[in-house]
Structure formats: C-alpha cells, structure tokens
Amino acid sequence: MKQRIQRFMMGRYGADQFGQLLMGISVVLLLISLFSRLDIFYILALGLMGYEYYRMMSKQVDRRYEENQRFMNWRYRIVVKWNRKKEHFKQRKVYHFYKCPSCRQKVRVPKGKGKICITCPKCKTEFIKKS
Ligand SMILES: [Zn+2]
Image 1 (cartoon, rainbow, N blue to C red):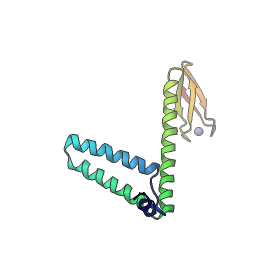
Image 2: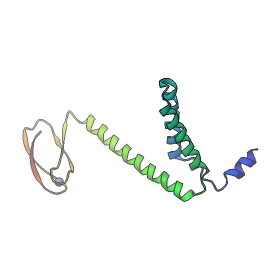
Image 3: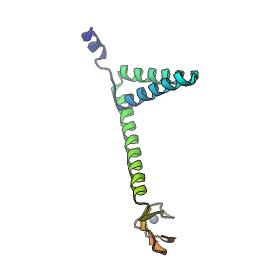
Image 4: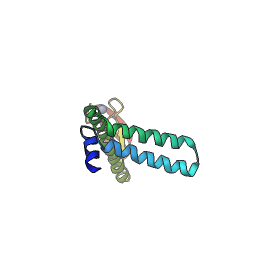
C-alpha cells in the first residue's frame, strides 16, 4: 500500500508552504461553518481543500513551485512590514515618523523638539513638522 502511494505521488508536486496555508484556512472555515451553520463557509472550505489536493496531485511542478514562490515573497513582505510596524510602535514615545511629501520615504525624528525642518534623506526635500 505504501509503495503504491509512493508510486502514485511520483512526479507529482506534493505539499508546500502555500498548501499548508490553504489547508489551515480550510480547517478554520470548517470550524466556522460548524459553529455558525452557514453553508457558505463549508463550501469555501471544501473548495480550498479541493484546490490544495489538486495542487498536491499536480504534475505541473514548475507552475506549482512558482505559485509557492509568489506566496513566500508575499509572506516575506508582510512579515517585514509587520516587524517595521512593531518597531515603530516600540519607539513611539521617543520618535515621530513622518512621510516625505514628495517621495513618501519614511523619516524618523526625535520627539519634543518643537517645530523642525526635516530634510528627506532620499530626495533631499525639506518640510517642516512639529516633533
Ligand atoms: Zn523624499
């Protein structure tokens, strides 16, 4: 039996990080559907699960790999953004964060210095803000 499964899975894509997320979401949706008794969550969960099984069985390994890479990039960007937000939150008592009006670069200035002229480190635009 194990050998047969192994032979069946040969050349197929299998599970990856994107698949784990899909499965996780579908389990959550299933739980929601159990408690809310709304069919829509059940259908969505089945759909997601079906999609993930399709991905696992897929023989188009390159395309599945690419999907997973896109997902990993996206997840990486979210993590970076989240960490930056956390960092800003930690520093909120000591620093002010402003966006440059012309290039939207974020600039950090110390708090409690009154009105100051900020020079953007990226495009050298000067703007005045209260710190
Ligand atoms: Zn700028």
